[in-house]
Image (cartoon, rainbow, N blue to C red; front, side, top):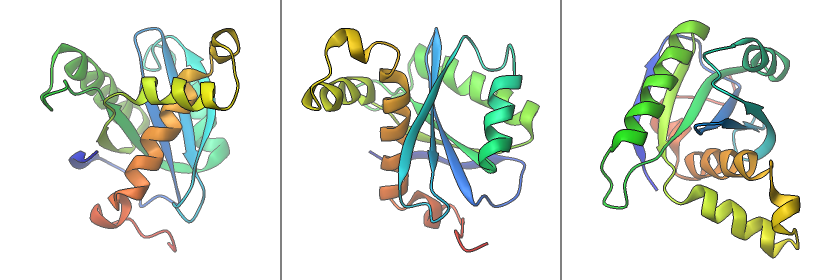
Length: 159
């Protein structure tokens, strides 16, 4: 997995990063610890976050996240298809509306990986329903952290 773009948008250097897995019906949300080493799945928001910013804004304030890492659904060949363009447009609307910095991270197969992790943990498909998106957001954010994204993008966890 690789960071597909550098930080864009406005904002201050974050202490915590918030990961988003933006789907057509739901958005998975994850948060990093203040050292930006560990990502934790947080919740799932129904609908488009730009249609109603209040739930996402509340999470950002509660967890003091100052930047977003958004999973970008590239094609298997690594290109941006229609779904990636939709996610990029939604993320840019969020960045502008919230006044936040945003980075994109390749999320190919993150939902499938999330289902596998949950199945390996013994959860049935019924028990997984509703949680896959937040686990995928956690995997996206953890991948970004593990890839050195914060250091590469000039984010210092000690600030």
